[in-house]
Image 1 (tube, rainbow, N blue to C red):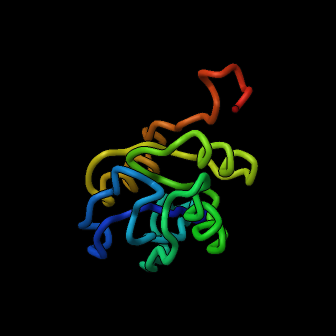
Image 2: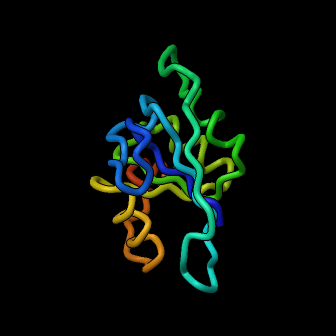
Length: 123
């Protein structure tokens, strides 16, 4: 699996998960070895797009990195729907990147299900 974690700084696993997906400055990309439940490789790339104007361009930007999972402090319904359509699982977390990864590896991280409160009908 390949996880994208949004960050406002480039501090890697010692940094904080960004509170808002579309306004993050960086993506931490982590390749996960599912058998070992460990991070096999990590890199940090800048988010080069700006947020706003009726769409979340950051979704398309992070999807360029072939992620299967994304972790953010918060995310709007439009971004959630785009990730759901791309088959990417979305998780919410507040705190250090390292702790988010630990919880993901231990299957204790809370998943955000797009449009759950709308009965599956996004608008």
